[in-house]
Length: 310
Image (cartoon, rainbow, N blue to C red):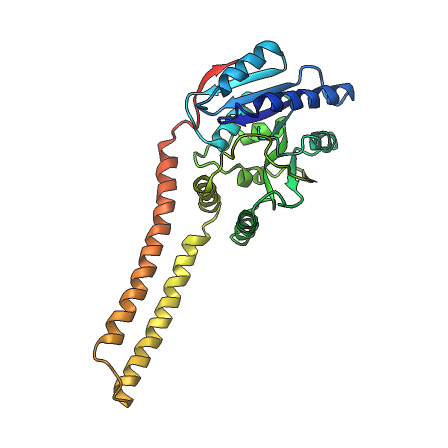
């Protein structure tokens, strides 16, 4: 089988030489074991980097025939860069992996074995989150639980380290949505899959390209792209507010009729005004998020443009 490893890159000049060295070693080892063919490739996707990432990719492509490069015209984001690599790259099996060397590259051989056994999708799943801070570990694990609660089919503790067969990639090509959340799309393909656990290491060099702002954006993307639960929650909140407001009305009338403690007009104006106002603003915000998604989808803008191929 011909293997292609797709590596999205954004300002990864510090780690790229080591990444290329280790991935070439993986290909050589797999070829020596006759697991893959000699024309297997490494495809690096430069997602509009501002450092020397593309210059390094060009240099490695000139020096080594197994290295290929795709340069996007600007920064489109990790998910779009990854999709660009998957849709452009050739090969019978495609493995996506980040350039930071945190994912265990030794798992690729197990992924290939699972693919030989008939699996079209093989997920790399983290055994634990020892390398994460307590805050990130808590938020990440609870986010996966939240997605599952909302009915989104995701693999717990799986990011974007996975193997896709050629058949799975061609099926993925048919998904034309602009708001990409590949962790939610891949399970929708429905092909036979398997999960393989691994231990995630510390970042080899450089800084994380996923600060809090980007992580929150991806989190909202996953929820609003795959679940209508927040919209239905608004209906439930409306019903709850109606019941509470009715009970408050009964309480206010009771205070007025059977005691002298009532402050004229307070209960009937201030409390409902604040309560309903907050719920209305929250509801408008949720509806606005979905309208924004519809707005972007109806434009049908390209998800990426390729500037150069090496």
